[in-house]
Each structure stands twice: as C-alpha cells, then as structure tokens.
Image (cartoon, rainbow, N blue to C red):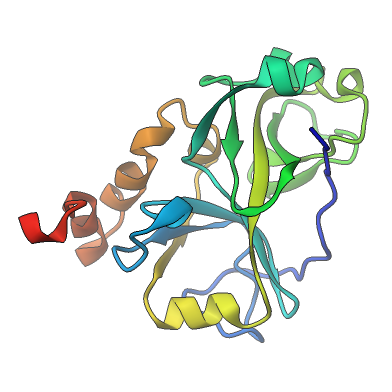
Length: 204
C-alpha cells in the first residue's frame, strides 16, 4: 500500500455552518450525512474535515471500517492502533494511499498537525519509531473524501450534511458502527431526531 501523509494547504479559522467558500474554514468539524445521502460510502457517514478553504475541502469518513488488518497493510504502525485494528475506508478518493490520525501524548511530535484537541494528522513518511513513542493511539484510513471549490458549499446548501462540532473520541471511537447515531443524539433540537431515521424511509 502506498502511503501519502501529505495534506494540501489549509486556510485557518473557526467554523460556521453552511459557510460559503469565502467564510472561515470548517477544518476540524464533522459533516454528518442526512438521509439525502442514502447511497454508497456516504450513507450515514460521519466525515472529519481535515482541510477546507477556497481550494476545496478534504476529509476522512470516520465510520467505515474495512476487513483489512493494519498489521497486514502497515505492520510498522500497528502497535498503536486502536480497536478495531483495521484500515478504515476514508473516502472514495486515492484508495491506494493512506492517512493517519493520532492522539499526541507530548506537546512536540514530529510533523504532527492538530485537528481536534490532542488528535491530529500523523506524517506516515516518518519512521514509525520516531512517532509512536509520542502518540498513544492512531487510526489509519485508506483513501479520503474530497470536494472541489464550492462543491461542499453546494451540498451544505442542499442540506445533504449537518455541520457539527467534533470531539476527540469521535475520531478514535471504539464503536464506529454507532458513530452516526451517537453524534446526532448529542445535538440540540431537530437534528437529534435524525438518529432514529429508518434506513428504509417507507417504514417510517
């Protein structure tokens, strides 16, 4: 498996729901799929945005574990992987590459970029031994989700996604299959109702 720890240039700034391209970045926030996205990898998906700005957006799906064991794909990184210890399908783009998110235990970690509190992007180009003694938990993703300039904003305007705050535990959840419901249930107002939305709308 080819590893690519590089992340495109990002624009800094606090998030704002439904933001146009010129608005502050949504980096570090979650996109939670609404029932409008009912097909493929984005059905009931929870996406952590790693980049968002005038050049588009990039993120990883947090709740799509694969059947590929990390020890088989990237054995040198397997020692710090949290359960389930498999590669996650981060999105439909660049499935031959890999991204890593990890929880830092020290203030200074080589080539580590914070995204949500102490959880950030780990540079897979570095030797694993240089990083794993300073990161106590990681998750590895095959592929990522990507949006061209303005594309994500169009999807937000169409209400395909809810934009909500992320928690460090979302990224490294031990129960990723339940993450969509868990994130929705903690939201205020009508957003929490979506957690009970049936997969088959005809059953509602």
